[in-house]
Image: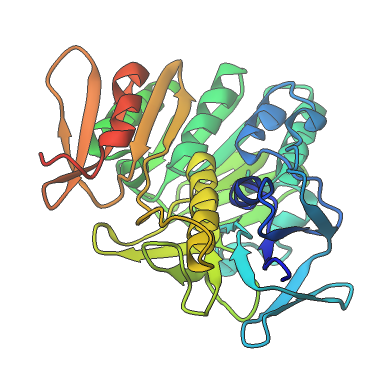
Length: 382
């Protein structure tokens, strides 16, 4: 009897983690599809390329010992159980794990000037290796401190503002929220960071972009209050959107075991929108959680094939970490939309709860306190 074929789309954290979970088994065949021309890399390390001295090849992501096909996915036919790739080939599968990740959320097109400031490298996200190399080249090419505007308030915006300020660049941090990062970190941590931002860089909180025009040497940014910011470069850090192949648009909805609506299709990482009884509808897009989702999707697939144990429902427990103005911001679990409580004591630790259940913990310079909570989440009432 031929072993079932598991086809994995995507070579980031979720895809490679799913493949590693499966390759040691002899009761499944595993194929990993990598985008044409792409060398897989660890996306959470690209900041070291953009703002540091890390060479691109230092963040190459080793692939598991599975069959690898370098061909961009065009579409999935879930009825025929076939994937069409750019070369025209069709790849058959018994199980499909979609781990195609995400793309950066961009500035609305009507905000950009008539020429569009993106064409000459004056406006960019920090989402890909290509983005990071472009930012590095722009900053080094100026041969002087740069004027950098950052539009956003989450982890990427905060870390970028911190790194650029420490390197002597002039930073203007523009955020739609009066308290930037409140969704990513929760109110207590975000309020502390907002004060740090205000002390370290120029801040425009509670503002949106009305127009961005390119000049010969940078960008002119008009805000909704008619204030104007001049910059060599605009870094857009507005989060991400799911990047799924056709026929899906806007991501793939999964249940609490990462199953899509289609038979024998699973999704993991930034491409997945979760719906479960504990957290409702949610999506996370950071490296460690994507890796955990990839492994979990592979385990559920094995169970559904009748050759593995049921791993149970997936709930986010992974840790994340950011270095901002010399402080270590750490977290585990889920924080968006949760109520917060600042723990009394020497450590700055915040508990996040939904309906009285602890779903996440964040802290400042408190990694040793925060990280151990990962395995206790969802089992503690507060």
